[in-house]
Structures are given as structure tokens and as C-alpha cells.
Image 1 (cartoon, rainbow, N blue to C red):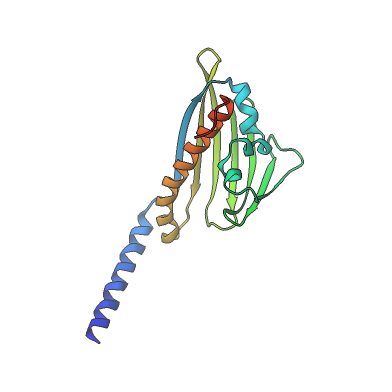
Image 2: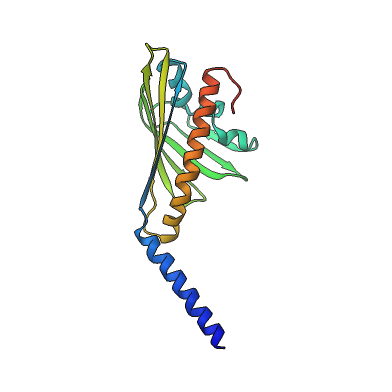
Length: 181
């Protein structure tokens, strides 16, 4: 009986400490990755500015060929959206909220299975006399007040960083006509 009481108190203390630490963890996340591609901003922009073309380099489509995807009637420019549903990857929606061809695309993302919504931006900066482009992909969002979601945010930064890196590598491979890594 005494062991059970000590175990219960220790367990309650651990849960309380984890909850308190969770409350001081960051309420938001921001991940940014860049790659230089051997293509002009005008050549890169159609692949990031048109939601229907994300499947040409996005890892989501490759991971689940059975994914159901729908698009707005217009797939590029502000107001364009896509929704997806997947047994493997859940569901969600992305909507372009700002488009500045061939320099910038800003979008909002929400997920049906996750308590996190976010925003993303592609910035395209020409370099090397116009024959190359630095593509910077930023993903950020708010995690809210839940200590559990804030703990998830620590993992999310790592996972999202890997996703951005792999997506940029696939985009680079697509633009430079190589097979993706």
C-alpha cells in the first residue's frame, strides 16, 4: 500500500513538472530552409505558385498515391486552395493568401487531424546573373496554450525542418532534371 502511494505521488509530480515545463515552452514555431537551384525565378515560380503543380515535387503525393486531392477552380494566385484526405497522412487544406510572381508565395495550412495550423512562404531571389535562384521555404505557426501541443512543437520543428529540406531537394531535382534523393 505504501509503495502504491509513493508511486502515485511520484507519478503526479512528474506529470505536474511536465505540464509546468510545457507551459513555458514556446507558443509558436518557425522553420526555414533554403536551396539554390539552377533555374531563374520565372522558371521556379510556376512550381511553387500553382497548387496543382505541387505534386510534381511534394513529398505528400509520393507517400500516398491513394490520396484524394481537390482544387479550387483556379489553382494559382491569392484565393487558390487545395484540400486533401489520406488514410496515411490525414487531411488538410492549403490556401494561397498572397502571390507576387515571380518572387513570393504565402499560404495558410490547416490539418483535420492536428491541433496546429500554420503558414508558409516561398521566397525566390535570383542570383548568378539570373541563371540561379535561392528558394527559401518558411513554415511557421502558433501552438496555443496546451502544454501537450507545446511539447509536440519541439518534435514538430525537427520534423518540419526535414520535410522542408526534402521538399526543396525534390524541387531542385525537378527543376534541374535529376532524380530526387
